[in-house]
Image (tube, rainbow, N blue to C red; front, top):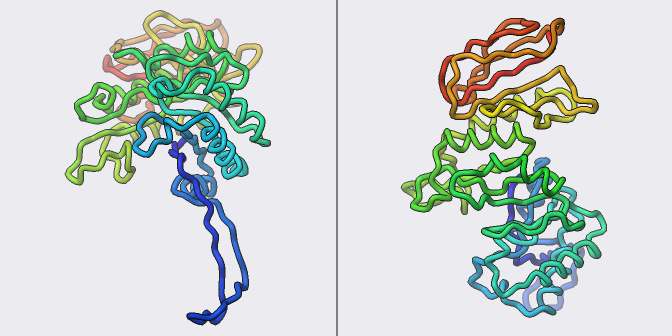
Length: 338
């Protein structure tokens, strides 16, 4: 998922003229009218690459007055954006970044914008709205998924289970802090902590997003300008993505587990018993005991989520013990032995 800020789309009118003659009337041989502007151009490239684009349509960090337009101007703007972007199959609608910091707008305004989207988008793209301090009511029927920024200093991914139960919709963690070293707490967590939050979210059934805010000699923050990633979490996130792709069926779902672990299993109904992942976060167990039944044989794999290694733990059945290295960020994967 890549976010594009799209508050100033345009139309590019391109004409071709054969044998152009200065000072004379020239007739065009062909014309093209194309959607343009940086946000649209980025979305087009992303679509061609098969990447989803979450379009942030409004935001409070505005130097041009877009966040303080009158209602009729807002509505005209929304209809224009919808007309230009709806045809792109990879588009998601994010009504705003940190909607609750846009003090000129009321909840009735946001609901009116949502109504325009539902009316004017014939393809019914995914829709949500992103918070700063106050969560929106994600139970509202027009919202297709939760677009959440963490509001607590320490907990983020740990709350995914709670949000899933409360809203009964997919939970997208659009901001769980950024790996970096700037002065603000939202932008200076370590690569280890970012990776841990990704694994927590994955095992709990959420969808986390990555960002980076390292100070660099070129004074460019990847968070706002892109460019070169300097952090240590992207490779670990790529490693997690490979494990996600290896999951049988439609993915994983959270499952009941002990208080000092996070666990998920392959999604299915009735509950599947052929694929499990247990994650131990910053705990450092030297071993864990397992029991499912007396007869089923399980292939055990020990995953070091930081070192990005998978170690064969043998085949076991009945009650069995898995030896672990006693270090942080370990996981155990169990699959029915073939």
